[in-house]
Every structure is written in C-alpha cells, then in structure tokens.
Image (cartoon, rainbow, N blue to C red):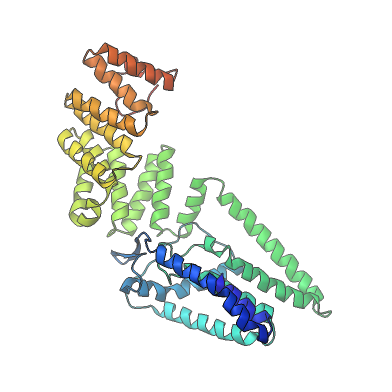
Length: 418
C-alpha cells in the first residue's frame, strides 16, 4: 500500500507538492518494516524438486529462496494470463523446480516482465491512467512474489487486490473507445463480449464449487501432478466411505512423487485406519528408515503408527508410539484420541488401572466426548466397580439420551456408538 500511494503521488500530483507528500508516506513504510521484523516466524514448507524436497519459508536469502525468486517470473505471467482468461482455475497448483539451475522458460519469463515494465513506464506519456493501472497490478503482487519467502508459490486467490489494477486498465481502454465516435461501436462490442465471457466462465466455475469433491476432481483432472490435490481428494472419498477411490488417489500421489514423505505417509495412514495393519507397519517402518528427521518430529506419524501396532496386537509398541506423539504435541486437542487409544492398549493388556487413568486424561481435554465415558463404563463393569460404572454411564446418557453402549456392546472401545 505505501508503494501504491507513492506511485499515485508520482503520477497524479503537481511536482511542487511531491516532496511534502512523499514525506507524509514515510510512517507507512516504518509500519511495514516493523511488521517484517515481527513476522519472521513463517512456517517452512516444501517445494517438489525432482526426487527431493526443498524447504523454504523462513530462510531469507538462502539458496532455495533465491532459486524460488528466479522461478517467480512464470507465476507472474500466469497471473497476467488468468486476469484476461480465467479458465482452468484450480485451488492447488503443482510447483516443481527440477534443479537449482534456472530453466530457459524461467529466464524468458523474466525478460518478458522486464520488457512489459519498460513499455509501461514509457506509456505514461500517452496515458497516465493506463500506466498507473499496470504498475498497480505489479506492485500489488509484490507481497506474494516470494521477496519475503512464504509457503504459497502461486494461487489466483492472491489476484483479488491486483485485479483492481486490471479492471482499471480495462476501463481506461474502453473509455478511449467510447469517447471516440469512430470507435464507439467497437467499444460496445468489446464491452458486451467481455461481460458475456466473464459471465459464462463464472457460471462454469461455480459448478465446480458445488462441493469439495467436485472442486478437487476438477483440480486433479487439470493438474494430475498436484500432490496435495490428490491427497485431499482421497480424504474426501474416505469421508464418503469410498475407500477404493481414496486408495487410488493416494497411490497416484505416491507414484507421481515416489521420493516424497507426504504421499507415502498418507498411504500408511490409510492402511492403519482401513487395514491391513501389517502393510501399515511395513510402510511406517520404511518411512522411519527413509525419512528419519521428518518422522521423529511428526506427532501424526507416531499416532498412526500406534494405531497400526494396536491392530496388530503389539500393545507395548503402540503405547510407546502414542506417548511419543504426546511429547511432540502436548497441547493439541487431538490428544484426546491419543489418550483414549493408550487406554485401549492398556485395556487389551488387562492393565485396567492404567486404562482408566488414560481415559480420564482424555476427558480432561474434552469432558463432553462420549467415547472415554463409554470405555470407562466397560472397564468398571468388568472390574465390578458398579458405583463408578453408574457414575460414568449416567454422564454418557446425559451427553446422549439414546446411549446404551456398555450394556449392548461391551467390546466397542474405539468407535463412538449409541
């Protein structure tokens, strides 16, 4: 915003007023500088690079950051193209850097951008409004141009503010046509054409947004190499219990990016939740071998590894992995499931006192979650502690008046049932 104010002063103020106006903008630059200093804690994220994963987001001036900057020319040109022709839009784009050497396409893109900026600067003599609108577009893209590294390389949602510059540029051109008697009909033609085209593509795009699956299916059809689009689509199919399609999209992501942690980890998650548990244990063991640093800092890895061990009746290993998950994310709400699963493992080992302790730890995190109450009623029923059984059964019924779980199905420890 401060740069846009400076741009406006430069284009549309009297020369004698500029110095005073420029000085008045300085506080805005100080605020921006302060924000940059405070917000250095960007979360590092990865970019696919061949069979490896490059991390960026918090390493300003690093080799990876400079490499990403060199690749941004193609992204900026794509922003320009999408402004004119918003077709084949998706929510998750793949971004690949094959090596640290810039490609010819990236270099050519940077040269095109330099040429556009030179032409725009010279355009000021003929149309200040048109020149200003183009510079506004590029300046508005600066915060998401990886000058300050962050986790998203490209997304047309970032065009919301820059698109004002594009709309102003289109308005300036149409204005010139409308105020020229010889070109007025041409202006009307362009206005009707532009309005009709954008109306049509908006209707088409809205159909894609009908539901999450439709949106993600469109995504993977256009960009099948978009790893996260494949994985998120698989997650949606799991919610709909279409496990065959879910496994297919996880497999596609893993096959497309065989050297990356995420798709292989999702494959392990799928096996852990849907069985076979032996495949899950094998997958997680391979992950620990191939990605030791990522695994040792990932609470979800130990959580799902624990689920696989539980299903394989390796309860000591399961408890060990659940506890590692707790140490990595001691304050996360998801720990209610971790404590509950630890209790289940102790239950299967017939260590009922430790099981009840873990279930109560789960309730300390979420006192309104019915599953630990259900499990406590089972433990107290089996151990003959009828007073405690009645207490927790009453609480379960207060949460769900139709609850009969421990009376009808004393073995349902992990699934929330009425």
